[in-house]
Image (cartoon, rainbow, N blue to C red; front, side, top):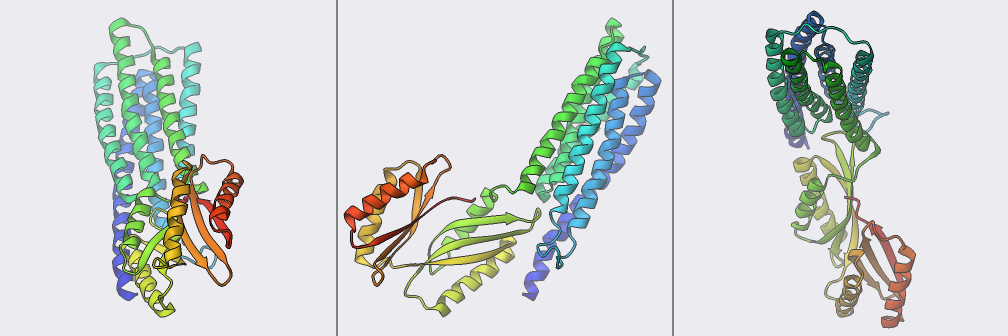
Length: 378
């Protein structure tokens, strides 16, 4: 366990360093751009340029929140929070989403007001060039931040990056409105501000939707589940695996459970050796604390071989039944066990039970059927 602690900590340290470095870059760039745009917007009396500057200032704050969220999330588990503080990052993402939405709403209100109370614009090509440069800077900052957010699995960074990228698109709209004014002497600044505000609001809703999904609990990450199933099924002594559940307690904190099919002739000591080594390997390589349930399987039982064929025939004739497992015959109690995995389109589970019970009763009247129907959790 000592060596596992050391190596498992390295990715976490690297993650924190990447988030800190990316957030710091975002703070510096956004503060500089905000100052420049607010000054230029005030001199030109342009609501769209000023709104961009305000939005840049908000971006600097969101970068601060992304950094603080990652910093607080690394607190060690305690009695109140035995799974750690990883979800603080999700709360930081919620605040970031709220700030983006407030910024978008304020820009929308200001732009609508400007339609009814227009102000004279004094834009020149120098100010326009500065806005263009800022658009390029924000675009590449946004792409970089999103990439680092995906690399570190940080919703906060991804949200900040999307906002930066949308800012560059907003700058293009601002430039277009300014060019129209300079060439045709017609101000569409207010309408450009409305379009910009809608872009900002969309970015805020996107971050909010993703973060609320994480807080409510999505199904476990599919890619992780596939890796875990491969790892488990490649382990000597394990016949099959099913019913995996994964619970997320932060970007790099997972716990889970899975049921394993193991030869019923193996002793408790043999099973312990298999599961203990597998549990440590999964914890070390995938950072998942995994708990195992065990199904006893007798693949050499002649009656069981025929039984599996009969069940397989039933499953193939029902489109909503994806697979079956945990087939076992208890001869002494005359019980027959089986689990079905069904999709979410199946509405009437009771009808499926009745059909399968009748199907098995006709073929194996001497046994009492114990059928478990469930969906995949990942």
